Length: 215
Image 1 (tube, rainbow, N blue to C red):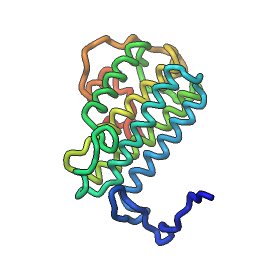
Image 2: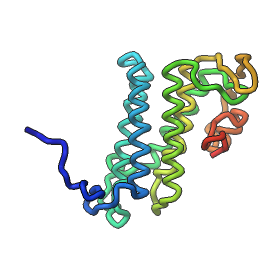
Image 3: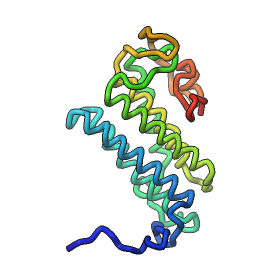
Image 4: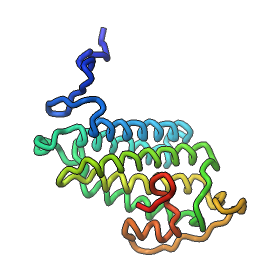
């Protein structure tokens, strides 16, 4: 019988990729714990999607990317040379792919004119929760900088993509924060904008940490 428990973590530590152990409450494990939560929430959203649909396939790809990211996070910086691009190491191409997907999605719906009240649909609500957990992982990663790592950039773009996915699944009607009216305006079809410009373009609509601060 195959057992999934090893008992090696009973001392409060956990193993890293390519060797080494760290406390289970270490910053590295907190980052991966938050990413694990986000991945599970994305799975909840996928469970609501039609099998084989665009949303289903997009979420599958993102969930796979998070395994790459977690492998990198769980590697001691002294052993980064062993990481494989796109398999255990987040690449610039992975970040650019997220940016392209954000631009493509927000061109499909009318951009909300203000902050949006979450919960229009079950799928969009779960995507919004996943976004907030990714933001938490990003904040934790800032406290654990690793030279040459693109983990922080990937998490930042992923949170923006999850916001765009939530609004996309809602359609062109959004319940706005300042009143009960459902208003929106067409997203300008512009070339790739910078990370900050994405949020400016939405009129400070991409919530950052907790109270909607900008990333």
